[in-house]
Length: 451
Image 1 (cartoon, rainbow, N blue to C red):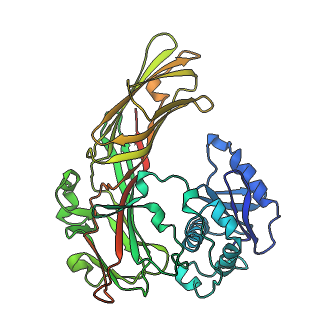
Image 2: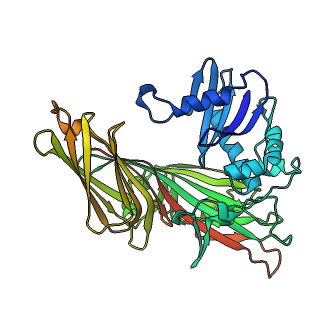
Image 3: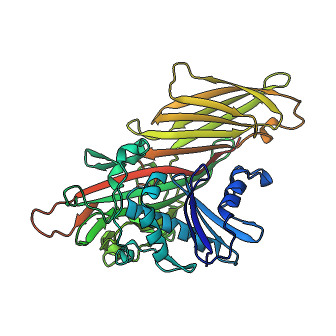
């Protein structure tokens, strides 16, 4: 049960506000934003998703730069409320086509109509885009795609050799194309978030993949879809396959630890030929979620060395090598490394002739940051940093620095080798041939190298 729901911009502007029960003071949005902005407790940079101020529980998630917040005075399950906030964001995106501050302001009547149907007197009713269609009567005002932020390489869908930008899915589930026509197409995302921890000597200590197959359908009449995965796909770690790690080097079966499916998926022939049958509901939804701890080849190898270089000085050598093919390029690559607390200055030395790289020393929290706009497969980059200290170290300097953490996005690449072999759509007629778009994206969840 929640008392209030509101959406704030990054500047703290209140875009949407709905008070369902009147149990929390009206100034809660301002209190929340002030607390999040100046969160300093325990040295954390960002506020946790759940916290309490003066007897009010605040829950929030950040979606495309917007803060979706719920408040309550009662003791409710945090995971339930956080999942509800994510689903509200997804439903609003389904109806508006694109989720942004501009689209929320232009469609505030539609947004409030959705909120009144999703939550009634603080209690959740439904978050199904399909069910809500029966109760929503306002048409969305389409936001001009040219006003959206520039798209990175990860926003590209592929159909054979054809490429289509991710703005293709910024369409509302209830709005038609100009002229009243509706373009028949379906989008499938295979998104994998990987967690890897390297030892100081470069060995892999832990590795895990959290993956999801997302689908968004713009097919009229809801035809049945058959989605085929790898025939050598195995689920569960039992038997001989559990000890077969050959797949990390390009051969062997794809072994998932566990997985779950959307309620609309039928598994009649899944055991036989790894095919999923479903009638896709409206909006974006996860067809399948899966987890994998089988060994895999990490996309990046990190090597870090820090050693003293004279009185009150030290040098850091940071090397990163891309282990994926040269025809693939990673984007928005960022490496961060905490430095000793007594570091006063850091001077950076990049490789000669490189472009698209930025370095920064954040003096407030003693951290170095290395940004690479693009990282081509098979290439190694090196950063040298000279540190100046305000006092002598009384301990091993490697224990006072690190670990190195890394974030990245790699489009059209997945480390698990899980593939969509084909996407079959039930034909209404011989001329019916909708567009099918598939996109693979690999992202860092927790990518850490100890030093």
